[in-house]
Image (cartoon, rainbow, N blue to C red; front, side, top):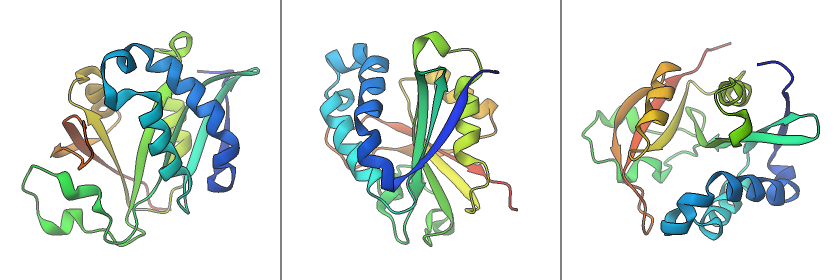
Length: 183
């Protein structure tokens, strides 16, 4: 896709970006938020605040002219992170060991409706993960969204197993991993 300008931000700009990120979320998840407490804007805002305050948080925001088309954000998992605590699949303990520099967690990737199926999601994904120093990335995909899961698989992500975060009302997720190129 051409014409999308991707701008990069760090945790220092998290508070400044908050209204923009919440507006896009409210639009993208308007239908889900009506019936799912886990998808409410208030719940998302709590998560956004937690993520954006983390050292190492990065955000890639796409623009088409002056219109925001979507964004992706995440942060490195700290040593001993509880990220894998809700994993329901038995895996080798070494796979879920976090050192603070091993894994980047892609927390959110969303694109507004007019820019879907245009390559924008992949562009934001790649812009966020490009040149990351970690050896791998992880993300969680709601198992109620099989098309999203298939999309990530088509981008090279591997499913590690089922995970239910230890958060009230959390759905069941696919925990996924992607090896990142080492530079």
